[in-house]
Image 1 (cartoon, helix red, strand yellow):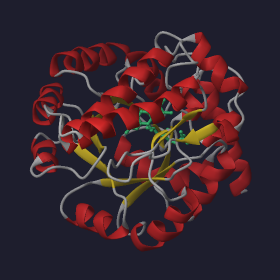
Image 2 (cartoon, rainbow, N blue to C red):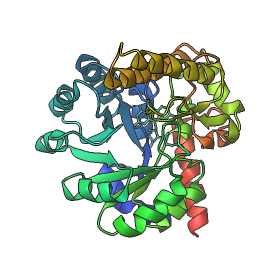
Image 3 (cartoon, helix red, strand yellow):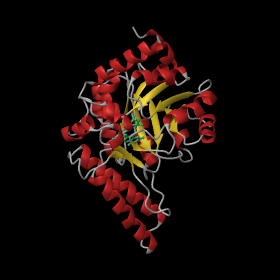
Image 4 (cartoon, protein in one colour):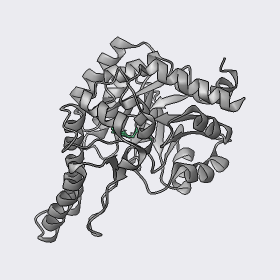
Length: 332
Ligand SMILES: Cc1cc2nc3c(=O)[nH]c(=O)nc-3n(C[C@H](O)[C@H](O)[C@H](O)COP(=O)(O)O)c2cc1C
């Protein structure tokens, strides 16, 4: 039924140890034991979002996920986490098969520490030159993520990244494409360009198995693509990684928060590192408010532009089956 798709996904699926080469990208607060195990059990590849978790919390989350699935899954670690190496140690103890390093260039020794316990490493890279460097120096796979995606984003569209990176890298390396994928026809086109597989977030965030609050899911079902907007940087001296989320009071408050942090920076009350940390903590808190508490007015409803294609709550297995069928029909 999905022979052509399976053939093009074979490399990626073999690397992930899953049936399909469809990853559900880690989403803070959303990608926990329930969604991650559901994705892996349905033939996709789930990834736990460690976010700002302590090593103890990550330890418990991995153990709980293992209790719900015997299929492989990954753990996403944010490179700027102050306890990054302790978190890697937790992954080592559990024999986690795949670790995704997100949020910045992997610090010295981190890729090596993961490989030392037999874990496979997936990295992100903003430029082709950096991607080549990371892949040559030991990273096992690359995720390219375009600005259509939900959450923290780069400035370049997925369609452009795919044209720039895939012809150069896909032959020799495993490249997964993320950002703005809502249907299987799009998956087909990236596979035909040489992608090893794809990563989706928005399409899975409101799945039946997602623990996101019903109000968060409802906001997804209602929103058209144009409401998933990127945050704007207010002050040129305070570099803020843009975040794509549904437009609400919270996105406006973020502008005020930036002014507040910029003023602290100006007065010398805080340094640049602390300023950036305050911004990141703001996002983590605002996302929790929306995902867990269901405050979709003041919280951050992070969502990608593909949110317009999310119209109802569906079990993960159905979403994956639909994507695979659309992909196959397109390839034929
Ligand atoms: C609510 C939400 C939270 C996210 N949190 C994270 C995160 O903590 N770490 C990360 O690497 N990516 C995060 N992402 C990005 C996803 O892993 C994924 O790459 C992205 O959603 C793919 O693009 P799409 O939303 O267009 O499908 C998040 C995305 C969303 C929608």
